[in-house]
Image (cartoon, rainbow over all chains, first blue to last red):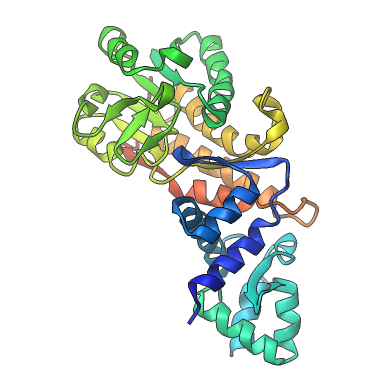
Length: 68
Length: 59
Length: 212
């Protein structure tokens, strides 16, 4: 069984690839750099949960061969 | 069977996505390429990787 | 044809949306269309309500933030809210880049008589470069998200159907996504947010509706 902690570790590792000079606009929630997003994922707040959702949806799309 | 399952997803991955982290095991980030190597060589780490990827529904 | 566009600019996100919408303004003017631009402090409920009743635009473009039941304008004032004034959208075609509004406000608007509603049923996400904030139109990262959004609007103004325009936007999103997946593209997290936006862009109402 995959723990919440393991999912957070995965998403944080993937967020590390976001360049320093870039920010992400997430709808009405605001704009964030990678450190703020990583912090949110660790805290498990609304932003963190949204980022996890986006990452997992993408990874599962890879399984379906959407990008091959 | 599980190697086939992994390779089915892996072989369809665009080249530049294969360097991305796909799982973290014991705090170590593992890319698709590293995962492939471990799984193909039937290592204990490869087994752990496969198990987690299946649980996460990534393969 | 009368077009109404709201362009608040009170944070980075709305600033980007507003500036990328300038391309729409230029295109509409070149086509000889009448476009009413509610920019910055003019993107208020009072102004929107007034324009809707006096000018009766056929097409409305809402930039700005939102929620599943509302679209907001300047300083996040709610402009249209489900259960309150979605009836103002009757007989109109709408494109709302406002996050999530297609989830609840979109269907409610259709029920209230809107012809079509194209928007997003979850957060619209995009990446931008911090050092381009003073000139968003030079931001090639943001372009990959905002150009497909503009393509939808341009296609509608050209007279294509809602379905055709939606498809053109989706196709452009996918083209941008696939360009980022080649062996020669730099590795970028942009892809996953593009995929998210593609999956959450929705077309509601009449799929064959046209502006002319």
